[in-house]
Image (cartoon, rainbow, N blue to C red; front, side):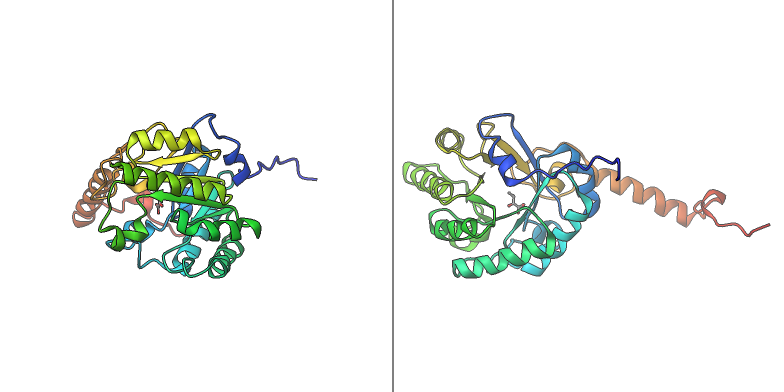
Length: 272
Ligand code: KIV
C-alpha cells in the first residue's frame, strides 16, 4: 500500500461550514500552471467566465461558451489537488429552464470533475438553484452586479445604492440561500448592504467589490497580479506582472538581436 498521504480536496460543504468563521480566500484561475501556484493558498478556485475578457479579449462575458468553460475547467482540475474548484455556467447555458441548467451543470461536472458550479441571478434563478441542488449539483450563487446581465443592467453598475436597489439585492441573496446554494458571491454591492446580507444569510458571502464585511473575498487573478490593462476600483493590485513580463521580453529580444542568446549553457552538445 502506498505510504503517500492523499489530501482530500475541499468540498462545497467545507466552504459552507466556514460561515462566520475564518475568512474564505478565493481567486480565479483558467490554467493548469496558475491553478498549481494558487492551490495551496486558497480555499476555492473559480474558473470564472471572466476568462472571456481576460484570456480572449471580449468586452463582456456574454460570448463565452460551455465548451470554453469545460476546457479551462479541465486545465484547472489538472493543476490543482486541494482547493474546491467551482466552474461558472456561462450565459445561455442555464437560464432557459431548470432542465437546461441541469444538462449544462452535469456536463461541466462529468467532463471537468469540478466540485460545484456557479450561476448568476437571484430570485429569478431560485427555482433553478433548487432543481440543481436536489439533483446533486452544489451551487454557488452570484448576485448584485452580475456581468452576464450587462445589456439589461445598462453596463457594469454598482448595486444597492438606494432603498429599492438595496431591497432587491437583499431579496436576491436570500432567495438563492433559501434555494440551497452553499455560498453566494456578492459583486459590486455597497458596503452597508453587503454587511446586512452577510449578517442575515446562513451561507457564506464571498465579496468582490462588496467590502470586508463578507465571509470571504475573491478577485480575478490577472487583475490582482497587475496583468490586466484595465481593472475595476475594487481590484487591488498585489503585483505588477505586466511590467515584469515586458522587462523580460525586452531583455530576451535584445539578446537575440545581439546574438547573446543562446549561450553554451543552453545548447545541446554532441556525444564525445
Ligand atoms: O467570472 C468571474 O471571474 C466571476 C468573479 C468576478 C466572481 O464571476
